[in-house]
Length: 255
Image (cartoon, rainbow, N blue to C red):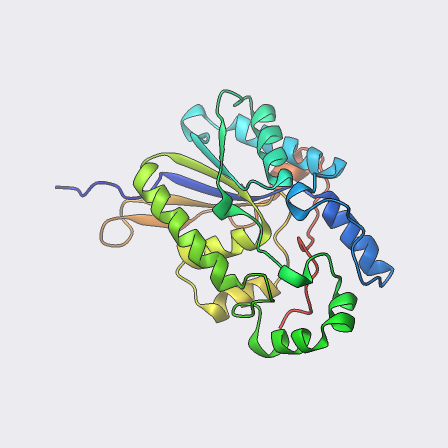
């Protein structure tokens, strides 16, 4: 007897569109300022105009998929830029009857006392932390009051438990942040520290880039998810939305 399918049929993991925080960070870094000029909390930073166009372009792509291949469940970070991306994507796809579920475990990595600081600001105000991070590496380094990649991975393990328990056979769209995309890759592709950091060094995850996995019943002993798309941005090109590849928040140089 064929064992019951454990996984969803499809998982898409999408980074939010370009945010106002991305734009402010670029301006602060270009001016070599210590602090990013943002009045909002990180959770309240909205999409930029370009980010809205990216979300709609990606939504049109999802809307053009055959109905049997479109998302049936949407999980979303509670951060405003992710919620806006999910809402605009679903509207453009014509999937507005489908509601997205906010899950705080999909939130951005917390930066603690380094929040809103640029690379220059970190080096100037906390040189000992910049040195420690360079020595330990971003996978294990946890700034005071913040999280390491390992901390993010720990909360995503429970997300995967929820997905395998509640959404077997579904088509699950996840809208979140750059570090969430990479940490899902670490878990779903069974990578190690060196492998995921090598991927991270290749470049940032594109805004509204799509990384997806499809269930293959012939893979492994009982079937498993296999990688399908990685940082897929063709829908943005086709929709005429410029592609942006930027860090979510300022960080020291990649190890």
